[in-house]
Every structure is written in structure tokens, then in C-alpha cells.
Amino acid sequence: MNNQASSPSVSPADFTVVTACDRNYLWGAWLLIASLRYERNAVAVHAGGVGLADADWRLLGQFGGVRPVRMATGIARGLCARKPEVLVTAETDYIGWFDSDTFVIGDITKYWRPPNGEFQCRFRSPEELAGTFRGRSEAGGAPGTIPRRVLEVWQADVGERTACAIRSTCSADNLTFHRRHLDFIRRWDAQMTKVLPGNDVGVVNQQSAAYHQTDESVLNSLLGFAHAAPPTDGGFLLDQDPQAFVLHFGMTPKPWQRWNYRHLPYYENVLRVIEWAKGQGYETPPLPRSLDRRHRWLTHTRSWLEHQYRRSRSIARRVIKGE
Image 1 (tube, rainbow, N blue to C red):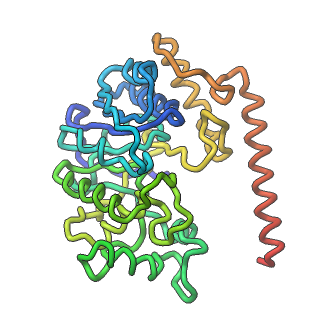
Image 2 (image 1 turned 180 degrees about the vertical axis):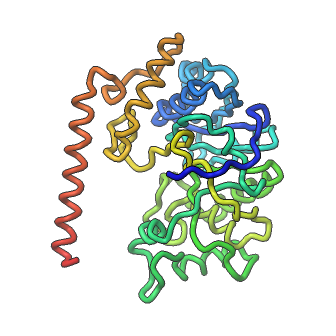
Image 3 (image 1 turned 60 degrees about the vertical axis):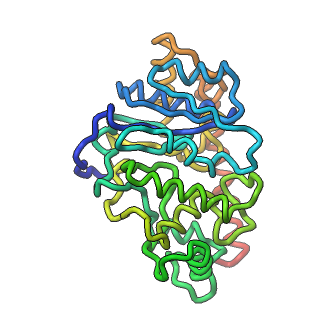
């Protein structure tokens, strides 16, 4: 991470952090809210939830400034594809979506206003993009670009622009935007209803080339081909400052399950927030071994061993393929 100048700051009173979780991500949502309060960030939080018990809502609401958004059950679309339902409840000028497996380190208030004043998301590097579409690119396609067949499906489904307005795809784990773009967020919701399966396929749909990242793929299709798409030329500030950033616990396992080796450097940050919260009298969900300092040695050792096992398998596959 490199230091980068912040955009004009936004007061916590004029920003809403929006997230959503089910029982599997309750710990994640708890950690997100607790990390904000640990950093003395009094921003309003709108927390969506599906299938949460009253005790779960109390765990999230105990920090103050948290508005519960009880999302309807029985809807086939997965939780990751229901982000707009909670985003449109925000009433401030600036709004941020934070996945419930993200964690705040430091004072991020100076970075959450989009640099262009409109919309902020993180676009992938060519190397990341090549990994995203690994196995889905057509023969002869330029590496590190969005495959032509994907663009063709997006353009046909959106039906507006003829040329794609983006060269890479953005991640949907963290977005910030001005509320003037709420109509675009509603369009995102409608487009997901149109093109995604009528059942919960999770975050990734391996059966779809164009929409394999479900909600994120649909967002990128609209950024690429919808006339009403917000400008995305401002860059992304929320992962640039090593003293103040949003950490995404992407991939599995999550810290409340087991520690992914690449996230292990942040073990102390997470444990510090949990211990601070307990010291302030806040309750936690049932504490797993992975978040219990008494099992630190076991947690670290297991994480390293799993990392070595996956690394060995990856090397073996490359050897077998002759790469």
C-alpha cells in the first residue's frame, strides 16, 4: 500500500456504512461495526440481515448508531445479490457498501468520499483480471482484458452503449458513492433480477461465463454499457494508506472459521478489537478458537500448514501440466 492524498473529507454525520449478513456472517458484521467503533468512528451503520435471531440483532445494535434492516426471507436470490435493498435505506449524501467480511483499520473518514465526488470502486489490475477470467477467455484473446464473449453478453443484456466504458472489472466488496446514484443502484437490482438465476447460487456461479461473479458481474455490465452509469475515473483510496484502510477477508476460510494465511498478519488487529469490545462491556457472538488468544499457537500453525499444503498442490499441478 502506498500513501495517497485524500479527497475532500466527508463528516461521519453525512455518511452511512451499509452492510448485510446472515448467521454465517454474523461474526463478520460484528467485527466490521466493532472495528469502526474501536477507531472512534461514530458513522451511522445500516445493517441488513436475513434469518437473524433477536439475540443476533442485539449483538449488532449494542454499539449504537446501528439501524437494523430486516430483510425478507424466502427470496431465492442470494444475499450477495441483495445489496441494493439495504443501500437504498441510507439517507445521507454519501453512502458506502462494506461487505460483512471487511474490517476497518485506522481513520478512513478522509478516504471514503469518492475522489471524483461521484463513485468509488477498486478496479483490478491486468494480472488480477487474468486470474478472474482464468479458463473463461477465448483463444486469441488478450490476457488481462475482459473476454469478448463476456462483453457481448453484457452489451446484449444491458442494451444501451455499443462500446464498453470500462477496461477492467471492479470489486463489489467495497463501494462509496453520492446518493444521486441511487437510481443506478436500483437499476443494478433490477438487472440482477433479469439476468441472474432464480435460485441462490452463492457468490460465484460456475455455470455462467458472463455472470460467474453474480452481483459483481452484473454491476460491471452496467458500468460498461448503461448510459446512466456513474463515472469511475476517480481511483480508489480505501486500500492505499497503510495506517487507514478497509481490509477485505476475501476467499475462504474467514477468520471466525480458520485463518487464511495471507490474512494472518492482521490477527493482532482483529484480536485487539475483540478484547477492546469486551473491556467496554460489549457482548460477542460465541467465540471460536480462531478468535481466542488462548489458541494462538494452534491457529497460526494450522494456517501455515494449510498454506503449505495448498502451495504444494499448486506446484504439483503445474509440474503435471508441464507449465
